[in-house]
Length: 190
DNA sequence: CGAAAGATTGCCT
DNA sequence: GGCAATCTTTCGT
Image 1 (cartoon, rainbow, N blue to C red):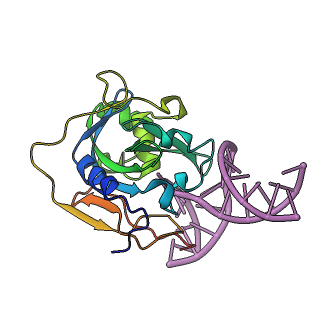
Image 2: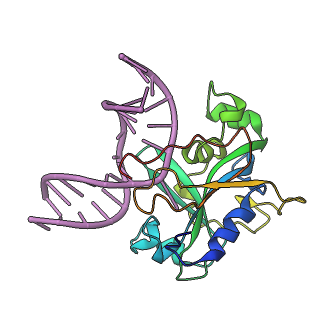
């Protein structure tokens, strides 16, 4: 396969995030869909060019990178390092496993399976915003990541959603057959 | 300083 | 399937 990032570590980390629980503010999801971004060598990564927005990606691993998308949404990533490589994993979808009432109240009129379907919706269901930028995910308090699941989930892969560069690199991973996984949409510019 | 693009979403035909 | 909403960030002049 083509390998623009030359960083298999981020792929390992991305697959390893599937099935883990991401705790937000008053709600938590079991991660069912992610995308790997290879940092400075990946044309599709925000870290491909170093800017104020992407600065957090160059920091040590296991911190949260949150950015605003299309003015109205937030998207959450796990920075996976190593430092200066700036790899990260975009959390695209999950199943709400805690605080479902809170998640519902944040997304009125949405079916449960759709509460955290898509990166903007997931951040919304968890109450994540720029206030959470740089959060330490392995600490026992606040926004954090749970332990890996006991049994590895069955994983499918395919091209990343929405990116106009490196659009054919199959670095999107999801739990096979899970109903909370978002629908694939290719970027109109790809 | 103006312009264009964007790791999206939901509603329209 | 197509497109508008919405606004910050980034890039070009």
